[in-house]
Every structure is written in C-alpha cells, then in structure tokens.
Image (cartoon, helix red, strand yellow):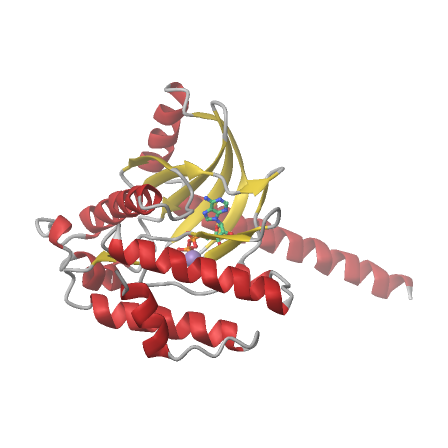
Length: 255
Ligand code: ADP
Ligand code: MN
C-alpha cells in the first residue's frame, strides 16, 4: 500500500519534470535570442511593461498576455524554428502587397507578421471589431488584448448561445464579412468558430488571426471566401440558420 503510494508520487514527480522540460523546449523554441532582443527593445520603449503568461501555443505562433503602457496586450510571436512557413507561401507570394518578398523562411515569416498587422488595421478602419494592432517587429506582433482580467474572451466555439442570440451573432458576422469584402477589400481566409471571440458583455463577435487574410486581387480569394462561408454556415446550422452558401455570398458581396 505504502509502496504503491511512493511509486505513484515518484512517477507524478517524473511526469511533472517531463512537463517542465516540454515547456522549456517550447519556450526555447519561441524565445530565441533575436526574439528576446525584440521584446527587450519594446520594453525599453515602454510599449511592454510586463510580460505575462502564455495564452495559446498554435501551429505557427505563440500568444502571450502582457501589460502595456495603459492597456493590456496580446503578443503573438511567430516561431522562427518551427513555423510551417511553406504553407505561408500560397497566401503571401500572390498577394500584390508582398510580391517582392524573397523566398526564404525569415523573410516570409516577417512579411507574414507585417501582413497580419496591416490586415488588422484595414479591418478596424472598415468597422470590423478586431484587436487593435499596435506594432509589428520582425516575428512579433503586438495588439490589444481582447479579454477581461487577464482572461481572453472565449472562442465562439466555446460560447453557449440561445437560438436568438446565435441569430444576432450570425448577423453581426455576416455584416463583418461584408465590411471586410466591400470596405477593406479583404477575405479572412481562415474564418471559423476557432478564430472568432465573443465579448460576453454584449455577445459581439471579434475577428482574430488575420495573418493569412488576402486582398480580393489574390487569385484564390474567391475560393478562400467560399470556404469561410461554408465554415460559418456549418457552425450556425445547429442554431437553425438555413442560409444557402449562395445566399450568404450575395449578402457579403451586396453593395
Ligand atoms: P493561431 O495562429 O495560433 O491560431 P490566433 O491568432 O488564432 O493564433 O491566436 C490563438 C489564440 O490566442 C486565440 O484562440 C485566442 O484565444 C488568443 N488570442 C489571440 N489574439 C488575442 C487577443 N488579441 N486578445 C486575446 N486573446 C487572443
Ligand atoms: Mn487561430
């Protein structure tokens, strides 16, 4: 009995150590020396007051909480080591804004980070609710933190909604897709319940994750838009939204 307990606690400790070393590996991966220098410079400039904890570890980037001068910040750091930068090619090389990017990992990742900042700016100017972009420096994007008391707003995916609330959220998403298309000349290109946050106070959606968003001149813009449309309709189908893809498309493309 006692022995079993002891073994249990030993393996628990080993597991904890393993977890720690995993975490260190991740941190080593994201906080390489050049990235640390950027964060150091941004903190010398007073843009970052204090780094906080990790919010998310994604395929290409990590997101951290931080305290800014006045506002809370989200810091998205594209990992130089493990970025699946080949996949970025298709989105960036044919974007007229980024045609003169050299085909190497560093430049593609830096251009990607600048593109996300620009896309957020254009979206915000068009009236779409997105995190306010603050600065992009190499692989580091600093933006407004969308959340409360250090906790990010929940994803649409994890937000329980009544049918009538869902209808309002859907209509707002359609309005934002329309503004993106008509005013910002953009297609989100990865829109789904995973890249929309919900402000719990008024249940308004917030679009995030716009690194891959492309202008309408991009040769695949229509295809990306159609995929966004299908994702949104798939999610809202469960709430009794019965729009056909063509109906939603025509709402987005209406004058
Ligand atoms: P990824 O490319 O890894 O999907 P995202 O931009 O979608 O990166 O961000 C990952 C997660 O980090 C989001 O699901 C969200 O929970 C959180 N997040 C991203 N940006 C912000 C922000 N501005 N404010 C609060 N949380 C954010
Ligand atoms: Mn995402």
